[in-house]
Length: 88
Image (tube, rainbow, N blue to C red):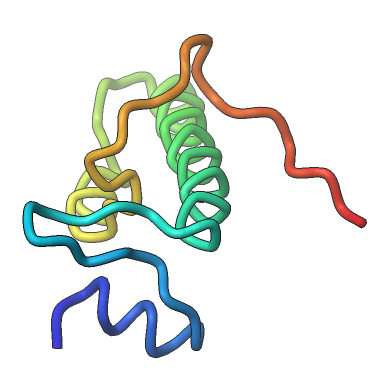
């Protein structure tokens, strides 16, 4: 089972429409992508803060981010991180 299929199984949701020529995010996939992008931005921010504390340019979360890339291949919206998702 691939990582996206494992994630779908864990969540109990379909995140991708599998098409003949690739995939397209479902509504649930788009929602999760917004959270993943914000988590990625927080990881970068934490990485920079820890580098400042340490006084170096080390990248402690690089290994984690390389193996947990939830950004998919979808371009980020202009302006960076999407706004918070409103809760109903």
